Length: 74
Image (cartoon, rainbow, N blue to C red; front, side):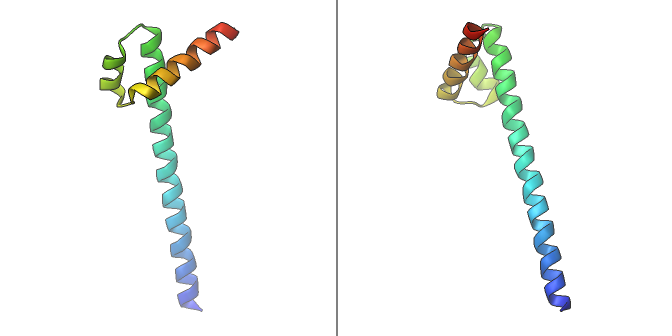
């Protein structure tokens, strides 16, 4: 029984650690997109934004289209 309890506790700790790591990565990705969006609004070049955020040109073009659509709707 003690072995099962240990295994269950270890599994729960691993799940919690993985969840925190996943959340941290998701937060970083959101932050990069926010910075990229601000840089796009400030008319920075795609190359400059790629350099500072690590986002791909395709992702930045997608983000630019999303921002343009949002401005058009507002």
